[in-house]
Amino acid sequence: MSRRTWTRTLLLATLLLGAVHLFAHEEFRFIGTIARVQSAQLQVKTKEGQTIAMKLNPSTYIHRDKQEAKVTAADLKVGDSVVVDALGDNLTDLLALEVRIVPPIAPTKPK
Image (cartoon, rainbow, N blue to C red; front, side, top):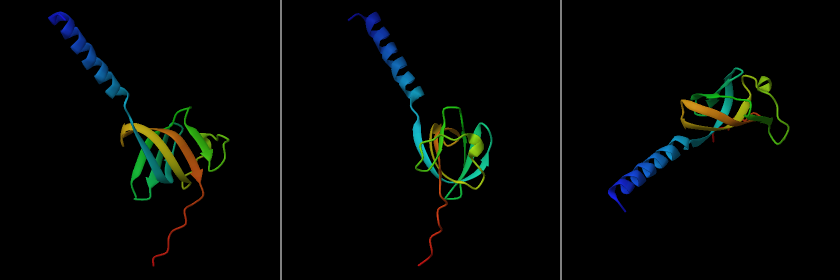
């Protein structure tokens, strides 16, 4: 293999590995209550007290627990208990893939 071919191959491999990293996202799951909702953004207050903001888009699957029928973002209300599966690079850049409205979680009694 000539030096020029070797250099091209190495450059191509480097570009491909860099491109794969661009498309790699982490999966997140949040359990909590809705703190704020707008047409394109949802904020969830987790059980730990942290408020997480994430984007909503038309392909975000929003539904009630154990029901397949999709509901709209307008059906999301502040205070609703939700489980959200999101995708993103970190906690400041998230897209909600699925928002499941669940029954309120009863507080546990101390022993």
